[in-house]
Length: 387
Image (tube, rainbow, N blue to C red; front, side):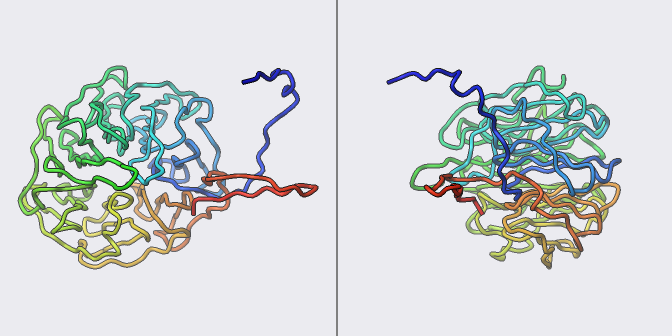
């Protein structure tokens, strides 16, 4: 071994060499009353904000983020200065980065504080009470490469100072999704998923997995059935219609029965809608479902492409975004034509229902698997980018 005098590097400074091209984004959100303001969490690039509808993105968390991958972001509806961020992406590819817990800002992203759950592995979703910015729920998937107890649904009633594990099943089944009834926030749905990455395979599914519901803010939970697959159940994302909170959609990974389900009575009974492969492939990476806040019959499914149904989930059309592998969608509850979508090319904003979107060549968040230079003068830089 040998040591190097650090003063030899005093004159060196890092500079951005590009390229300005977006990388994978698995978490997006926005502020309803500020229709041009959105946030994205990049798998390899921290937290970014735009206030001009996606034309420019600025980093707002470089000083705090100790884990590159961001799995969830939520802004408090009652106080837009309060932002919660959960690290670790729950879209657990073989090269997924493990998270390091949750952070919070109370000044719109100017400063941040760590608020716990350092062993949560990956935060799949966050849900903040619509009238109380200190009441927050977090879906902790747990370590993607092994068992650990810090997983399930956590609740904090003091803005992240303390946490309660209100839904714990076992040390290998975590929470991957949350959906809160915006009209009655004591009603919450949670998707529980047994998931573990091995060098040779992915374990996805277990007898405890499935969709759970609380009607008392997390004090007690019930596993839902009524037409949902039973037995070995894998990843289960869930969404509630703001236009009609009795209407709930769930993407259920199961065999048989893999696909999209809808309930019209608050989860008591379910109807299987479709299992077509373009909507259901690679559940561990996709299986995302988002309800339109203004129309109970409109729902989005995110997979290799972005799909929209306007007839309650019976038929789907493609919404042509700029890049494939779509992971998250936030729709402005005051205007459904305004949304931000996260995919493997970055974050894209639309102000007209998806007819046009902002570009992905303005975000230096690309994930590089390798970098090298050659022996030329001047030398050339080479890099292999994910997607």
